[in-house]
Image 1 (cartoon, rainbow, N blue to C red):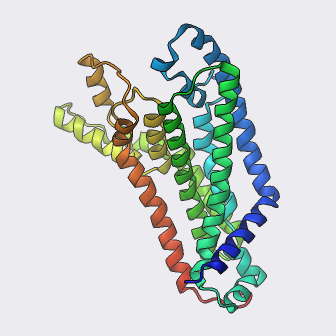
Image 2 (image 1 turned 60 degrees about the horizontal axis):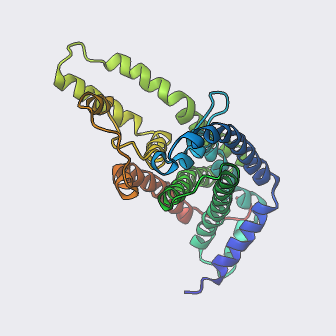
Image 3 (image 1 turned 180 degrees about the horizontal axis):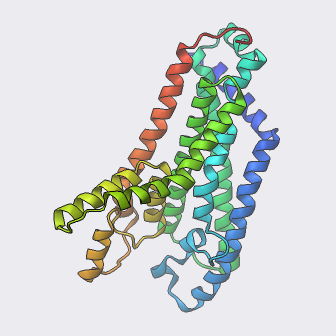
Length: 319
């Protein structure tokens, strides 16, 4: 199979992204906000590092999680703003080519149709991945230089895994926006649809679940009814990709988190005085493995649906 046309399209898409203002604006917002959270985290960590054994407390990981209450943490910014980067790079992937008439010209060449959508996705993912890893390594470098905290190999593995999971999370929103770009002819409609879904899961979904929780609360407090209520609420919360991502990042960046899910389990842990012993990296991965699998599955399903619809669409000049 000749893959040269695929990589030609990938290089062309990467060049387009790197010369577009929207990419620089979106990545600039994320970089400035994350560096702002890093500045507040550094001030708290520097004081704690003088009195704490850094190897035991995983102080370096707090660069990504700590907040002083005024500026959210690095982790919170990536969870909130990362989807915007995916939506911003994918909302006009197909419909802009269709409106300009260039899609029919590309397919008039000896280029398989699936190369087009695969290359669009691969190019955007490479650009987002390079930006995220550059930002993550920049935070690590600044943290080492300013605090002098020694970065252990396990902390490095946890941070790299967190960056990879952030890439999977943003890839879900990228695929969703590519799906809208396949479904809708106008880029504005596709962009608004993607932002509407993002706003729904980021702002309104938790409110709706809270209202449902009040309505579904058991009248008679038995063990069975409480467990059933907790499992139902957790199932509803885990339908949100943002909630799944928050569980994965919490497990990776907080080594003492040894269970996810029901608050009852956390209460039992406190009741039976189970110590908050940090888990190894592999054990933390096993704890969040179901959430991680669900995130990858949701990303693949979005890509599969957009791929299927694009391959079955009729392509005409300026159609």
